[in-house]
Image (cartoon, rainbow, N blue to C red; front, side, top):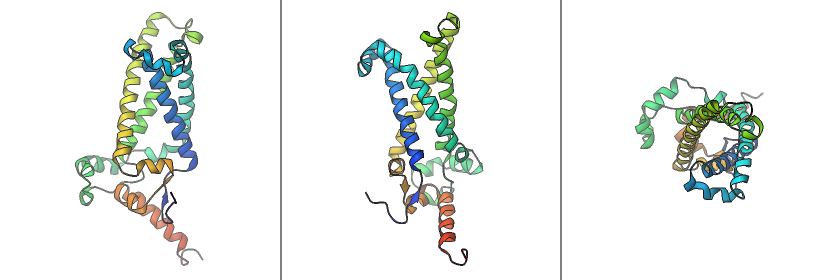
Length: 219
């Protein structure tokens, strides 16, 4: 599909590649992790060639996820800092859900829901990584005691459950808000989409474009 001439760039190629690598690794971690979380889910190990392969691959997927998330954090942490606009937007969540634009406070590049997902994953992914190292028998089994490993397994499982719930909410919101997925596959949004969902960001971009095209501001 051809990109409209007046479209706004929302995510660069680097942003999108990093995001999809992160998403792919997360899905692999969920599938491999669930395969040995409960016997009823062991069939999922077949996706990786069996239980031993799933067990061997899972921690390496985790290492890749942490590296990928560091890239995501570097690129997006500034735009996910909370401010007063997020409080007003959150209070109007009913109006947001019903598309009552007249009563929804204008918001910047990201809303409070997107920011909450970002910071939740920023907490959960390192927690999963550290606890995962403690129960990685091949390399760290001799360095950690059984009681420590038991606590690490519990925390790891709870953090994994939390991360899955956050991921489900993230995917649901991306599908529910029309054309959001396109912004992460093709990188752009229309001016109408930007005005509807992120009005302050729209005004920032629109004023920037006017400055570039206005000869009085570009002598």
